[in-house]
Amino acid sequence: MRVLGIDPGLTRCGFGVIEVEANRKARLVDVGVVRSDPDLPVERRVHLIALGVEAVLDEHRPDVVALERVFAQHNLRTVMGTAQASGVVMHLAAARGLTVTLHTPSEVKAAVTGYGSADKKQVATMVARVLGLDAPPSPADAADALALAICHGWRGPVATAAAMSRVPSSAPAGPGGLTPAQKVWRDAERASRG
Image (cartoon, rainbow, N blue to C red):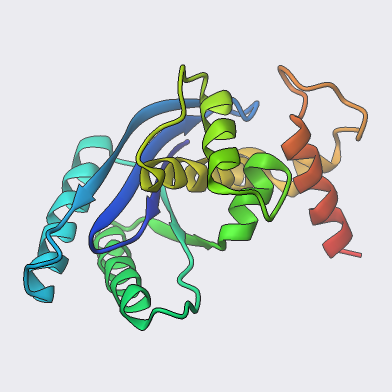
């Protein structure tokens, strides 16, 4: 499954494309940031983000899009830019018949690191480890986009809760096994189902 993760923003819109195999092994396809100048009018900035995301969709043809869920922040201007960029991504994905799945920041952190309150450095380090990279991706928007893609890839059809429930908690990481972060995710899924 090819997953496009998007960390939405008007100044920097991070994107990360990965392929996830049936055994939950993830491979980097592409990563980067679409930028727009904060001094431009908002409509121009939205258009630039749209052009950049459209180019990524056309080049990599993902099966699904994982998008960070917009959440309330103290800075209304930041929330508005994030929401505008998110709308652009949703529109472009829907126009291609792609499903867009929203993930909260804490959900992504828990999936990738095993800890829902992990800091950006911890997330970037685990993203590099999961994808076998020599160094964490930068800027942070790019690393966050990859984390979103990994979160979705591990949680999506490739790694359904039903399939994960067949793996015992003591299973080692590796081919067919779960990483420590995946075990935490599986246990949280089980607990939420009661």
